[in-house]
Length: 177
Image (cartoon, rainbow, N blue to C red; front, side):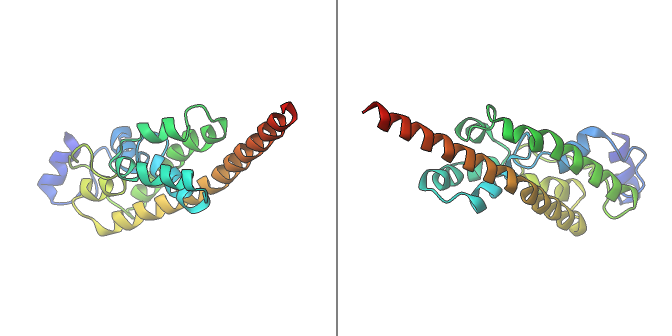
């Protein structure tokens, strides 16, 4: 509340008394599409995946994930039971928070202090929370691009492992006949 009062009184979010609150940093920079940066994972999947079923899964989940509802993606991919996605899903949000905290520290972007409605698309949360600061929007989109870039090798590895398992299952089915 002190941050919001300061921003309203001084007409700027730069210099708020508590610039590094975990809730504002997490909601604004580490929650694109839901827990584990699901939007970055979905965009990496759209770039890497080529099969019809994978592209269909991407299309079916794009709008819900864009509005921070990632349950379908977590179960449909499956992310929850795939150990390959644990590393980026846990560490990328922390990296995003550290990068955002540094950007706030050097006064590149203001601290998001304004209330943002639930369901606001993930990349727009910091933009709205900083009262429409355009640099914050560009910073957030750069963070999202970085997250997608980090997720791509994990998606490739997951798809390769999945394809190899299907290959082995097909060979074993063929031996049984």
